[in-house]
Length: 249
Image (tube, rainbow, N blue to C red):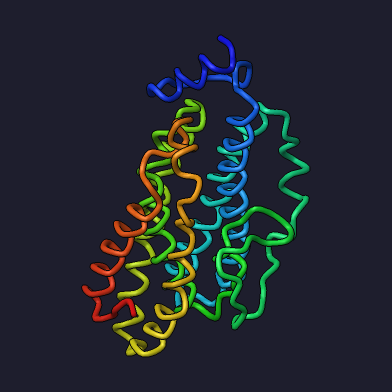
């Protein structure tokens, strides 16, 4: 196939299965998608690792440690796909300061880290257990929403990796809701609502601006516009918060 016929093939819903026939533009966008996911998972795991011992009980600490383990494993699944394109997987995992964070009050919009391709939301620090639970709930729900799109990408090995990742990430959001319920039962509603107010706009920005959707859609790397995914997340997350007497503001 020449480059043009591959573009037509992708536009018609075709799938690619190995790096051999991947056109340069497609490769660049595919690598960007994978790098953003891997970097976000590794940065998220690093940040959550710091609050494991802040868990109020053994059960909570086990859940937090499990999330750190599984996010790292999820990153590894996608990093292995990147390895097929020549990425040095061992060097990659050790090359970035995954624990690096900005000041809590920094406002960088959707700007990426100077160190890696993590989503902007992973540049902000967690402040204690309750704050980590709220962030994990909102971001976990966002990842679950985005997975609806990611599991359909036109690069088949990546779609398969995302299909393995999706239920694991969904369970992380469920664990966060269980943690939220316990904290509310301990009278921490005001502090949790403050965390919701802090994290809501930062998680919302992870859905992007939508400027490149048409090009990515033509390549089969995106199927649903970011604003549609964002609206779905807002609806789902708002419903979860409402069940617990909290609200998005």
